[in-house]
Length: 68
Image (tube, rainbow, N blue to C red; front, side, top):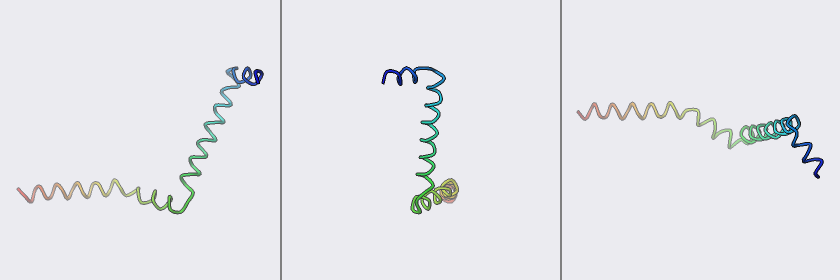
């Protein structure tokens, strides 16, 4: 056990281990996000949020102009 900790304590070895941990985590996140039909449909619907906000904002401005 102490030999393993000493091996990880070396900078050249710990960089490789950290890279592998982050890469596996990143791949896991990608797999989680892009698999599953319901999740995919929900994420696809989110791409229209900026356009919906602009339409709501524009309609609010036209109401203010109409009220004046």
